[in-house]
Length: 292
Image 1 (cartoon, rainbow, N blue to C red):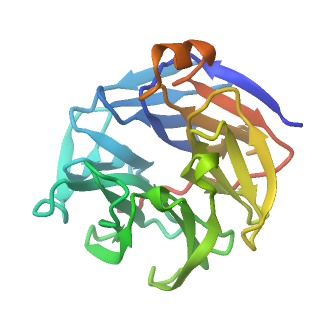
Image 2: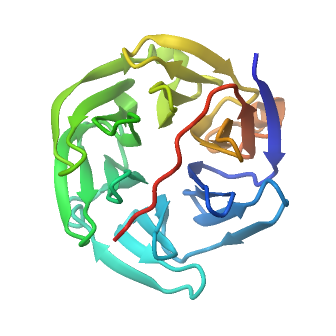
């Protein structure tokens, strides 16, 4: 059994998009709902900061040159926490409302990927997956997703994983690391509807996929063949995403949410919306930065 620890009380309505910065030994994450906020925590020192960027963030990655690239409800942006300045890049869903961006993550080649979802009915397969290249050109990679969510890559970057959240499915694609082109879309794993919705994910150094299950009180680790390797029971019902961090990349940081819980449900599970960590015996992979 892994040790599970409550890290910090932040009461995120919907905590999301945790990213560990190896150089800074710091975790960045978001609250993406009513009061969009960016958080930074150095677990080693306890240093903690938060910012309200003034745009409705939904997914993020750190930039190689400093600041962030954001997926937001109104498109893709660059933002610098040091100056507060933001730069709009593009919104391919601007004429397709209520479809909007959802989660986003950088790959090891420095590109940024972001998925979209139908905001009013996420079970409708109207979400798409986009790739933002280093020159900030945007490319549509696939569609027909019932809420494009958690994104990740195998250790060799040749397989990409994408959560189709409201289809209760994790998808896999063949990925060309050099070009970022995708092929061979297929089902990687399905989640029974009574086990919660698959949400954010991360991939460890052994090539296993860790998927947070909203409403499922757990994080499931799948082996590279899509078989359940273990289930980590969580003390809160809605884990939203996870990433590896810490000095040896063996600490699995977990964002959570209290949104849509009744007062009674929230009282019965203290720590909903807070940041948690699972101390594992498995090593993760460094989180890449966007090089654009």
